[in-house]
Image (tube, rainbow, N blue to C red; front, top):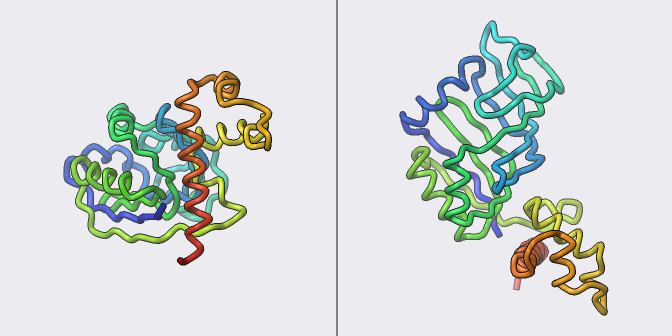
Length: 219
């Protein structure tokens, strides 16, 4: 598992599609990724946006495909907001087709001329995502790689919402007890998914957590 920061110069078609979003803002930066669900195409972020002159944060109901839920703090033209958004149908289809399993993180920023995206993933997902960017979004001008390292307080943050929920349910119902207090078959009924899907989520979650722990050690 590695963290990658990708800087992108949007294609002209991308700029044109995003132009309505920049009617009232110069840019926005993601301060905290609170929730991402690629299946539902839903995300909740804490962002800081820079407004253009004469634009009012109190009149700003949406930023692109994001709904402004609350304004947390204002400082001049900078405003910290809680937002909820939905990925486009095209993005949802692409993530499903490519089986991309990414953990979005910071820094992430978008302006009319530059986009920065950060995420944690395996090598395969990382390269497939980069291919998608080149094909649909823009030219990649810089890619920075960092090894994810173990941090006890942040360990579960490397899991998707689905993986985290299933692993917590498994722990709560005694799946990891010795001996087990619940079988994988019964657990699958508890979380309302098939047994093969349950085991796949648990294997991926366990692999991610182990990779995070072992990243802090050398051979």
